Image (tube, rainbow, N blue to C red; front, side, top):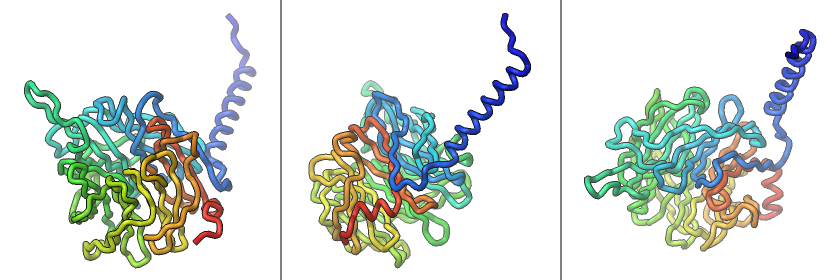
Length: 374
């Protein structure tokens, strides 16, 4: 049998180490100078992959998590996560963060299915996952009666190792039909403003949540009464209030409101000039005092995700498409964060919930998107 010489073994080890270092260098030195980076996050083929969230980790790498299964609301659904380079150009294969049949501490029954994911990184470097579930309800002879999101609940769990492993979940919101959607926002004093909604009542609400130790706790809750709007997304104003944008199941358009967490008061609830096909939106500030909305520019379809910008938070000017028309549609459920380098990172589901897409863009790209428009 052939046995390589000692020198050949040393040479092979040298080349293996060089290759490993080169791969590490490619991962550690992303193309941050590019104005826009597009990538596809590996997700199981033939499954529905939807409700994604993204976070920038203390290490500088990215974490994306979403729910995946044979179809939405199915017992096969699990929550997957993948790690990305800081520019999002390279992503790992996904792993299971939450398996089917999980049961949170404080929950009356196991989960029948899993839903929308949100991610929040606290100042201590921990990553919190707040996600939706469908709580199972089995009746004798009849069997499972919780088949859809009206049996929704909200769970929270935390990771101390950048999402590699997660604590057991605690039940955060134990109200029938409750589900999360957009990222939690920090408040003065260390708590967070959490946007949720009730699927059965078609009602949006905000809540003050504390994230300490291994458990999240729900405190004050502020429902938006008198309007059938869901899936609130938040952007902070300079005066400490928040601009809140909603999905409209009646497809009248994207709705907006103001919320003051110091008083718990809602105000200025009105429809904007942007259409809405009954689909989720997300929003961010461009750093110049203007709000930028990621939305589907249609009353009927989710074919494209686009950007629109507003100085007053109510009247928007169209900018450009964010997803790739004709290649990624239908595209929906955007989630956006701004990284420490000043660039924005967005994940969304594409190809009719078949794939998870990623986009990173800079302020320079955003200027080109809007040109000289207001």
